[in-house]
Image 1 (cartoon, rainbow, N blue to C red):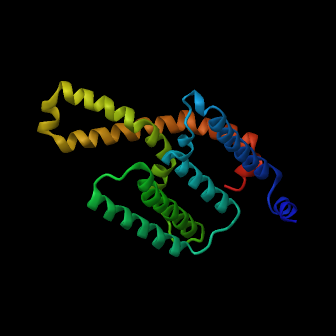
Image 2 (cartoon, one colour):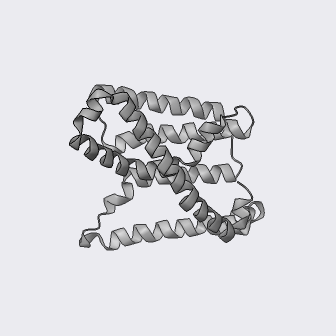
Image 3 (spheres, rainbow, N blue to C red):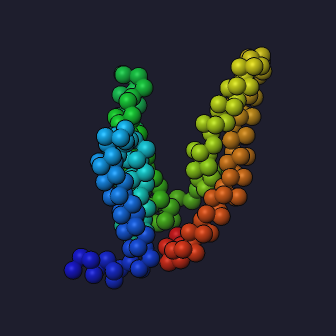
Length: 207
């Protein structure tokens, strides 16, 4: 059967991980539906961040399953989605959240899938600096908005700094984001990764 085939193909821990994720997702949907009268809207299920998180989970599952095919086609598809999103943005301005996700979000998913496929098949070899930025990219995502707010407060109180050396100000901000993100990655993310690898050892061996 299909279920027994999965168990023969994957290790128990991988199945347990994805089943747990599916259970958590189902519980979230059920809670949103049952508690919608208490200011918890079911629309949160279709929030762009939730959709993009789901796309990331799908890519992770496909990569771990070894379903890495048509990488170049995936890259071209991702580029097409990006082009469509860029055209819509030029015509309409900043897109609403859902159309933006369906263009740039889906495009990013295809690009990511294609690039990972090419890297795993030894078709490309990214520079170590870009690989490191990729490793700390989640920390960059987490910290950059807070740091932007901090920098904007500094510039608001000292506007001459930005007016005199705008490029230097931007460069210093980027350096600050990368430095803070690198610390966060080392002290927080890697600790969580080690804990996760201990909890799901067979998943870590497939990375």
